[in-house]
Image 1 (cartoon, one colour):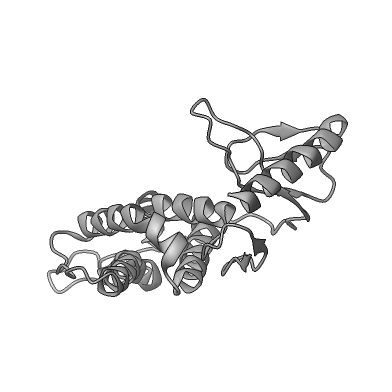
Image 2: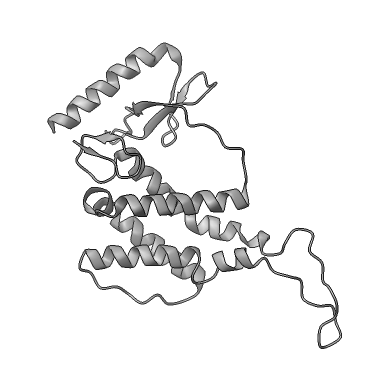
Length: 215
């Protein structure tokens, strides 16, 4: 048994990241292009107006939010994704490609590369915890700009989701019972477990745990 390098919970698979944190990291990486696009409306500071006159006599250009500009620049979101992908390729002994094209295309290429390497990252990369935490912090920071919401406590950790998809694959995402909630809802597959099935839920979780240990 090992400990997940992100959530620090015991993990029976021996991987660097547990199943739940692996899936959560994949979702965060996948969300980066959409978050990049979501920053565009915030380039102009709220309530900004043109001030003075330009050299040609017309209104001066509207000010730009430099923090947002940096995030959408080559060294922002795209640069972070590219640096992690370069580290992955270097540690795997692969060629580190030189980024090319526009920022949005570079970001998409880096995201595609990271997702392609996620199985290796989760299972074998010693830096998986640093990578997953950096991506989580980046996504959380971007979301506070685009759609700020009050912080919500995650609640008590219940175990991993035992739902099985049509292919026979167990979901495995981490389940929490949030304060004040009447049911446990999986953040990955959205399966809901109301109180009357909690006893059975525990049985399913215990069975899956034993199966992973025996594998």
